[in-house]
Length: 291
Image 1: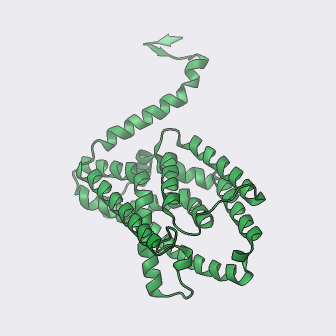
Image 2 (image 1 turned 60 degrees about the vertical axis):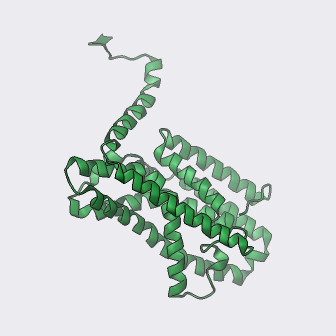
Image 3 (image 1 turned 30 degrees about the vertical axis):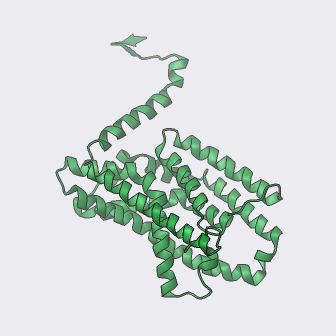
């Protein structure tokens, strides 16, 4: 049945195309919204992300010259045996730069959509957008504080039980970490956070506040992003024992694919199955994985 050129009872073939059509329509709306953002916003994001990657590459090259095999300020072995404010400051600085390099590319659609909405309301786009970005990065910096504490506690535990010298225990711990990260991909929390990260327009509609509350919206987006991606960083630490450039590049692509590509949820499932399979192989000793 057709009415005014609209197929009211679509065929099986057209019903199968509904999902693809909805995805394309959502992305057309998103691209249209992003197009309203002032050019200086995406340009500054490119510069900031490029600078963060340049700093991480410089850190890796300096570490290689010290025979650290690409290990930088965030290497587990270089954190130190005592908890100090100086060590914490160095770690947080490196961690925040790393988060900027890895997470800003996938957060760009949300940031540009926010800037476009601000522009439509004739507000100070640059100031409010950078407040949003600063609040987003603050969430990841705070997560770095938690990571620093956990690394110190975990490092003492590992050395006390001699796990570094026990290949079987280290292999099993890595396999379990990979498997748990894969299983987390199927949890409601992961699906909720991924949906929020993938839907900038819906996020802004739900969390829209006045210009003074750009920081609150940035914090909310940072929390959703953290809930979506935290397990990946556990895998990176367990697999490489450090923040290696190779793992950074790989996980940046994975996060971007999940959050920004049209079929992100399917990619998330594929990543989950891959992590589970890899975890079982590593735990059984069939595959060796390292930095």
